[in-house]
Amino acid sequence: MKELKDVLDNYQDLLASTKLSKKPTRIEQIAIKHTIPKILNATIQKENRKNPFRVKGSYGEGKLARIPWVAIFNQSITESARKGYYIVLLFSQDMQSCYLSLNQGVTSYVETYGQANALQRMQKVAKQALNYFTPHAETIKGNINLKAEGDLGQCYEKGNIEAFYYEKSNLPTQKQFEQHVEILLGHYEQLFNHVGKNIQDIIANNEDNYQLLTQQKAAKLMPQNNSMVKEPKESTYMVNSPVRDPNIAAQALCNADFKCQIDPNHQTFLSNATKKPYVEAHHFIPLSQRNKFKFSLDVLSNIIVLCPKCHRLLHYGTWKDKKTHLENFLHQRETLLAKDLIPVTLKQLKEFYKHDLTE
Image (cartoon, rainbow, N blue to C red):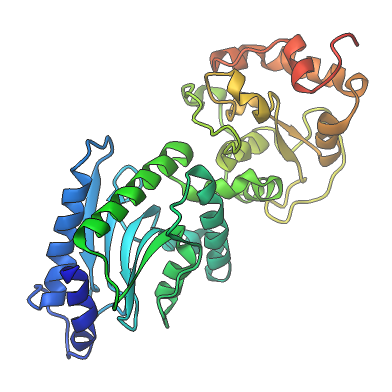
């Protein structure tokens, strides 16, 4: 593909120039700013996609970037390479290869977790993201090698979810490139349909990560009146991989004043994140039953706050030991659950908690 070759053959000469030209005049600048974006826009428009897209190419702002790029942004997610997730064509620093990558913005990770933890967190999210679509057999999953020397380039390397790899000596035809773009656009859309705007929250599927993120987010919240709860939303969970929003769980912890809702006098320890008694979020109607409900179970009315001992009780205790607690929660939350269009009966709870109905 000529446009890729134009960048790979000439970009190092541009880097050797004394200053950045604001207007693209060189062949590699024109490829990054105009011709490659034009090809991407034409590929996007082949299908009537419901989400608005923006295509942008960049070789630096103020100074030349060592790794130039051309990105496709779903504007419902992001319009910037600094946050969210997007498809991006990345040229290696040595200009010997390039990658068409489904990747992530790093700035939001650094702001949330700090520079030291951002890369590790990006890698975990990238790995989890592959569960939400079927990756193409020819793509690289996980880390890519951009020969990057700077922090930003290394973040692109770690943030890759899947990518098509092109060597300078074996570049794709335009038709092959467009086919690869179409494949990644499909995966991009599937990922958005399942996890929404904030891809970082998918690592909350892991129980420890979910509770940890909940603690971190709860430290910044104030109690919220029930009238502020959002309208019910239809469930979009995948069958084998429910996504739990730690922001909702964090609000539940805050509303409960960080006290166990079975007994507020239960003793626990101080959370390092909140400096409050450590408690955990538990879905009253288990998310394992989400396929039985049209509307989302990951809502405030369905989250109860428990000390670690009581949390284990509801998961692993006998029906006799937890029956009264579940009946009490059902009585307290029946109206709120109905407002969220997720009504439940005691008989259903017994089924959900896997107990003999003859008991």
